[in-house]
Length: 158
Image 1 (cartoon, rainbow, N blue to C red):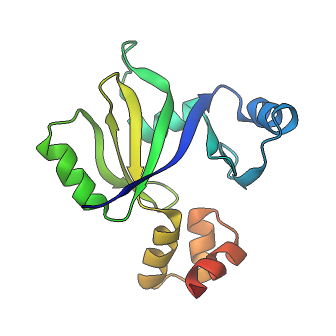
Image 2 (tube, one colour):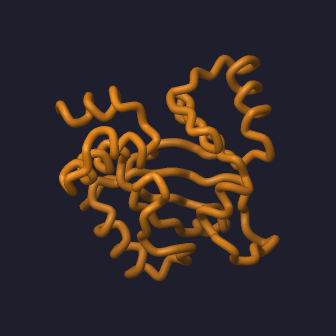
């Protein structure tokens, strides 16, 4: 069975700059990756600009007030298709099927029983390896994933 690894909790915020400063300056969180509208801290907490996140997740779909759209729990899986098949077999409420995000990562999202958003995705290390295997250069991968070239080189050296 494919193991799911809890990766982070993602809070959807109105202004990522204000929230970033709060978590960084007041709560001493250290930024690991900063993609502008999406910031990840070394602790596992992540921030997404709410409007950007909801557009990525739902597109133009009108959202219900009954759902919890202010956060998501983010898991990574080694074999995304195994988990997807389990979700489908158990008739879990799906937000969207497996699809590629603008930064190249393959993900799907579901609702938990309380209607919180659960994202299940391949790791960014796997994204880099997949894109490299597809023939993309380190520079092209960097542009696509918004990751520094140095990080991509480290991943590809493993």
